[in-house]
Image (cartoon, rainbow, N blue to C red):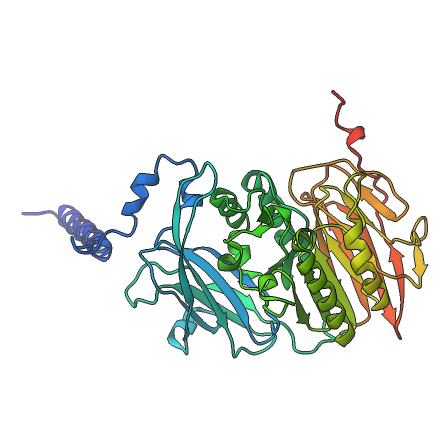
Length: 479
């Protein structure tokens, strides 16, 4: 006769065994389904089989594409309240690309709603840089339109197959406001250029962590050091990661996006920028964008420097854009500084060509890179030693976000300068003011000012912190 105690023990043991068998069955079933999803017949090559020949290449995952989308980036359009542009890359096994977009919801129920599908423009490109392997990729670009202002959407990119695993994650993005008087913010970066993965990544990530609600990011050229390096471009996209896909970017090329006067063939496949510039050769490098109540203008200063034809075309175009401008605020961004920070780097031809137009039409900000130092000020030196500066003209800024550093020379136009310092700048535009703050990667405020414009008159308030000017000689020992 079985005792009551032994009987209860036997029932408990049987229940545990049944639970274990059930868990084992579920694990086997899931494993089987995952394996079945990834199996390929002999007539269909495995999408990652081509990686085998690349495994010996250092950082091969940054260089070579796969069938899963990478290098996903959203770019500003000339109607950001109703559209956004998105680009990405795959291997050449993928011939077509699509974007799926829906209104964002509190939970995943957007998957059950109206998901719109947009076909991308896809092109196969082969690229080989000096001392790098040949890279074969398909580049995809799409314009997502018919959107509502100031609205959050979700989107993902892939090849469009219903049962295909090679989709990106769902990204979240917000359109611009329709009311031009509403405030907006953007982050401005000088050159990233060198050691991008190891040393620039902390800058863009710190900027996003400190100011996660920004509306877009602006890059003043020299995103990479070697225009055709798939490794460097891979590092740039890796450093920004999901930020590139969720915060729209706008960029102007620097001299390192060119070689022998020719723009990298990766620029236009990787980015979708406005094509409203002066000539076909300058499409997506020289352009203008209306963002709420600001006119944003990109000048391709390397093309300006390389070609007299490009120079004349950009000058004539710039005047036509400024003359027709009805926006309250105007910002120009370009790579070469109109006012340089060091001797031997003076861009006098650029200055003589565009400064008269900047002055004539009352441009508010000129944002630049190239010199690998920091400086901010006014050509008339109105801001030296003053907290409030009345009747100011244009504020010029030169900045650097990457680790490549040069020395500068103190000049009359400078209100604030710095050496051997990585920075990002947060710029907030509202109805009657522009606020500007330059921050280090650890969140220290290095420079700050505010422009107030009312009834066509401007004054500037300097709000620099008490921290001393950072110079190389103060902390780098001379050899």
